[in-house]
Length: 175
Image (tube, rainbow, N blue to C red):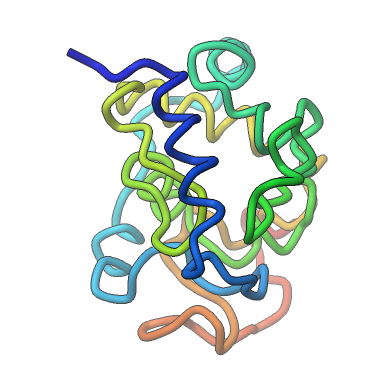
């Protein structure tokens, strides 16, 4: 039996008050170091489409309850955000998408993020539903910052072991 969304959100608020939930820099990896390679190898099996984005929006606003923390505009400003430490991620910030792969984002939605209020939604959402939510969340950035996402490469020193160096714009998705 899948846990109710209310039970998951209650757990989130309780964990948010824990001493381990200290602020951290937005660009720090969300996935534990020992899981980064596994997470970065994950790739969405879904095609990029308006239908998938619409499905992701319905889940974000409904079953997933993502808006409660991340806000209806993805800015990390949902009704529960004020009580959460660290604050929920801001999907509108170009750096959020530029400094992590889609596999890392999938991993965090499915399993949660240690020392934050982000619980794992694997018991509530199917893998395809999580990938749909990611496509919708990408729309919050207005297309900015998505140059490296999905390539399995990290950027900058905060990406942890295996992270690549910042190389500026490159062909392909960067343009």
